Image 1 (cartoon, rainbow, N blue to C red):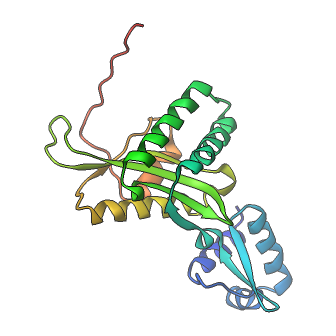
Image 2 (spheres, rainbow, N blue to C red):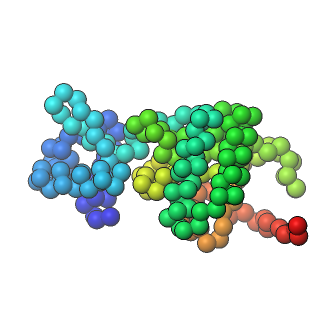
Image 3 (cartoon, rainbow, N blue to C red):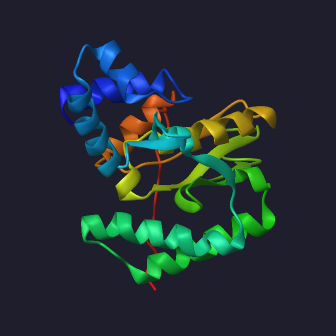
Length: 216
């Protein structure tokens, strides 16, 4: 992303109600044509959008148009679609794993607190999701603990603030439920994912995960 794109995106974050092209140009000391060009680039990258008020376009950061809402069973297909797109980018689509994802999503949506399974909706389409749970007891931890189990954002909308919006919404709900600690797990090699969770305030734990592979 170019320096100008980053500056426009940062400016739009400060004006969630939207800005006209002329306003952006004035604040950035650029000509209107240049600003319009970069806004179209950001729109193509799904990082900016606009709404029309009369004959005026009001430009906003893309995530400002996102609605966070509870997921329904009908959204399981959206979860799988997004996860397939994510894994497709990595060339590792595993159909058996997708079936496990369906089961996990269905279980949480049917049996858990509705605010533990959230979707990010943009233009009536689900573009991201997050699923959490509250665990009552774990080894050495005699308290209720919040866990983020599954998180996914459509590759076309990554790095646009949607994942952060989902994460904050779930963390706020954990807080309302009286949860003092929230945990999650990530592979060592998933640097971007670890950086994302650190941006939400997560830190490394002095705990060691143990695993045993069973022979079938």
